[in-house]
Length: 207
Ligand code: URA
Image: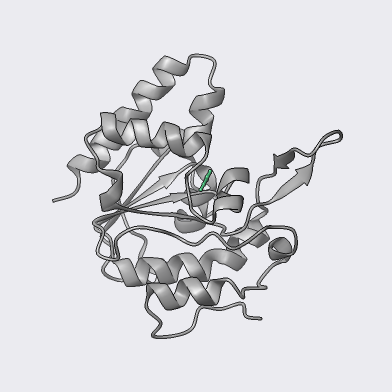
């Protein structure tokens, strides 16, 4: 049982330690901790909200419907997913059971849960030291840029990484929509094109 990442642990050791995290209650109902995945020297780190139903079962981030859309958008933006370190602001799936049937309905994590999980995200940032962090959606953006950050106002802007977040070496950060928002958008084609444009801007900001 733990709540904080161990000092001096490498990514594999962090991943193992995160499996024992009881920093909030989400571990109780989730199948497993879904830690980040990707190269430890990635220039780009993408941060989603939390694992979904399929990620919870597979133990890997972004392998469900949102992940498949993200894969296509990355390819269309000329970014190789294999080069990206993918993770989430919260490492456990939060859900409620559907009223009928076995479906598990996604629930947005609370601010308390996001704050409880932040030390793990900061530890990943510290080990990977990406040139650019891409926040996918408001939950990730608010975790790293503060609760007053407005995605609608600052979407796609390349910003300095906030000093008070305590991780030196991470140069810049940007935020765009979450890929699941595109799956729900009334004009899906326009939403998808704008998402790919944001990913291209992000890619252009990396040396
Ligand atoms: N949505 C997320 O934010 N992260 C995942 O890993 C999957 C879906």
